[in-house]
Image (cartoon, rainbow, N blue to C red; front, side, top):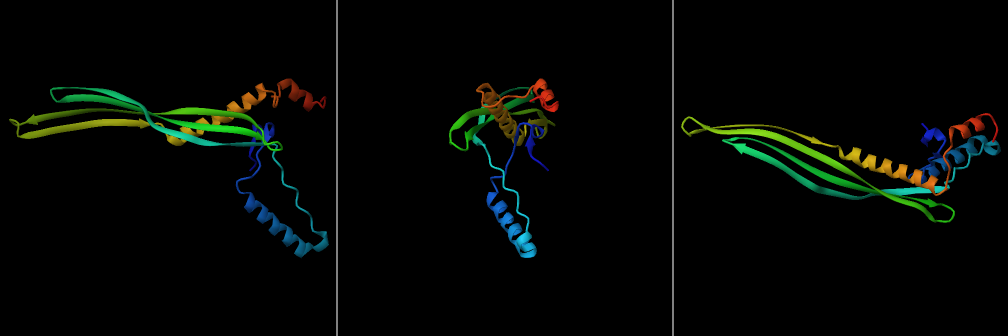
Length: 185
């Protein structure tokens, strides 16, 4: 499986997080080939290098940034609703590998919404000696991992768009792609 953004037309993702394991595995392959094939051992292709380094992460998760609700009760019968929002913040930047210069930096936020509603009945029966209590309700919570992923995707989208605006790269138009296909560039 190839991890290539835009089907390989935007950029190619290279491994850096597990680089130690990758280098060790390549050393095993090289030494095994030398033992079995000797002088005729085929060399491994060189690793791809990165021109730009994309880094970032979740820098904040604020719980209960807003909350509220309302309810009413009349003669032991009531209903209520409650809501709450959390917020996740993601920072990302692109650095030029050869110079170390930070070319772009963005921050995005995503709100995570939760909502609950319920109804209840509370009554005394049989001359006040027996109590009846009935409750029903539901809650909806937006998944946190979805919100984090959406914030990361928005940060990447912003980086790509701002990079094009700053002329760090250019988007290929349909005309440019046709010219490349026809061998005119």
